[in-house]
Every structure is written in structure tokens, then in C-alpha cells.
Length: 228
Ligand SMILES: *Cc1c(COP(=O)(O)O)cnc(C)c1O
Image 1: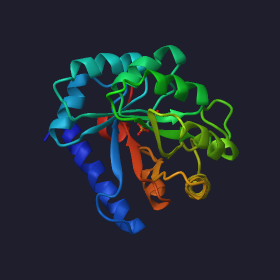
Image 2: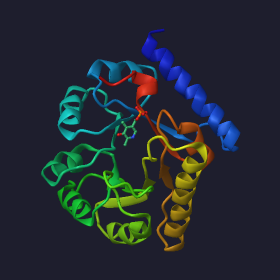
Image 3: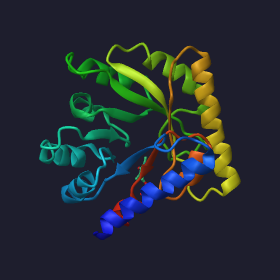
């Protein structure tokens, strides 16, 4: 097994253990392999090992890779970075998921650009859970209102909420942030929006995120290695 394949197996085992500790079924948590900055060959290798869901941050970079990987028909692309308004078209035409909806305007553009024969784009509302000035996403108090508006768009399906925890948070702080996300999902459901996804947890905080109810974890460096 290559180093990459070993890392991948280790991450799968860690997720399985986190699921067990959290009392959820094995396989309940979906792994998104975050391949940003890593070459197409690495994506192929993990794909061959069985991975189907991949996350990318930078639209230009993803575009190049997606075009080179069209021979992998069942690959599932998750966009997890901010999408500038001049980059929405490729997302609308080629992505399966967008985890970073923080503005109604972006969602409106994408809904309008989504080809009619494609299913609605599955999206998460990005929540700036720790209120950091440098981070994208809506304030927690505004998440439900934004989700309600986005849910009205014809070619968008609101699946849930996404966050990036504040870097350097201690365990108790992580639990507070992820716990608030879980509460917001409950609030969304109470509004009649049948959302079921909590996209939270990265290489450093995956276990805590799963303990707090993450359904999708986004793991990059633990699989692909350190980014240059
Ligand atoms: C890069 C990135 C990840 C993966 O982070 P790692 O620490 O490498 O696991 C997850 N989510 C988002 C939004 C990212 O930008």
C-alpha cells in the first residue's frame, strides 16, 4: 500500500471509531476527501481505493481537475470554498454539492445557471459559527432566515449547515461551536425545512465534530499530506 492509501485507511478507521464512540451506525458519517492543491493523480489513487466524494476549494483549480477526471463518472464533487460571482457558472454546471452558501445572491445566480436537466444543486448554508471577522458565512442568528430564502430557489436543495471551527479552539470551545450548529439544524427543521446535513469536522477536529452530530466530515491533510 502506498502512503496515500495507508493514510486513507487510517482516516476511514478513525471515522469508524468516532462513529462508534458517538453511538451512531457505521457508515453514517460521510467522508469528503479534500483534495485542494493536490494533483489529479492523487484523486485517482484514492478513487481507486473506493472514495467517491471529493472536496475542492478553488474553482479554477477544480475546473482543471474535473475536466481531467471526466472518465470517473460517479465521482461526487463538493465545493467547500467561497465562490465569487464570476465563477458560479462552472459550479452550477458541474458540482453536486456546494457547502458554502453565505449570501442569497450567489445562490440565486447558481440556481438560474443550473441546467434544467440536472437535479437541484445540494447546498449547505455556511455559518460563521465563532463570529470571526476573516471568515465567510452568515452569522448564526441569520442562518435560518437565509436558509428559508435559499430553499425557495428552484434548482437548489438546502441540505443543511456547514462550518469551520475557529482555529486553535480547545475541546470545550469546539463542543460549544459544533453544539450550536446542531441546535441551528433543529431550528431549521422546526421552520419546516427538511435539512439533515451537518458538514463539520476537519483533520484536526473530526472526532469532536462526529461526537456533536456531524454527518459529513471534510478531511484533507490527514489523507493527502501537508499542503505546500
Ligand atoms: C482545507 C479545508 C478542509 C480540510 O482541512 P484539513 O485540515 O486539511 O483536513 C476542510 N474544510 C474546508 C472548508 C477547507 O478549506
